Amino acid sequence: MSTAPATVPDMTSPAAHRAVRYAKFTIGYNVIEGIVAISAGAVAGAVSLIGFGIDSGIEVAAAVVVLMRLLAEIKGGEPDEAKERRALKFIALTFFALAA
Image (tube, rainbow, N blue to C red; front, side, top):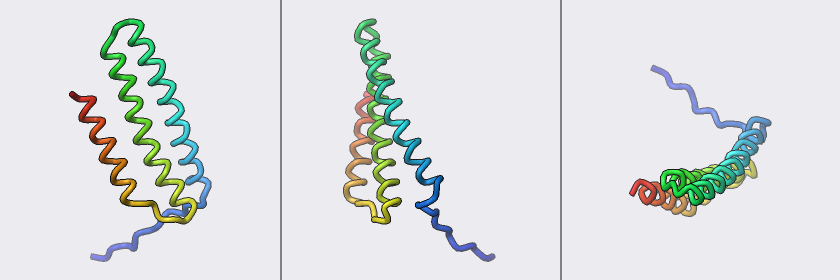
C-alpha cells in the first residue's frame, strides 16, 4: 500500500487570504452578538441569554487563536507553539466555566 506525500497548502493563495477575512468576520460578528445578547439578557433578566453572550466571547477567543495561526503561516513564520498552547488551555477553561 502506497501513501501519497502530504501536500502543504499554499499560504499565499487567495484562499488563505479569504480564510483570514472569514476569521475576522467571525470575530466581529461574535463580538456584536455577545454585546447584544448580554445587554438583552441583562434588561430581560434572562440568565440563559447572558450565558449565550458569554459563549460568544469564548468563540471570539477561539477565533483569535485561529486568526493568529493563519497570519503567522501567511507571513512565513512559525507560530509560537507555547503561546498557542496557553491560549487553547485558557479557552478550554472558559468552556468549563461556562458549563458550570
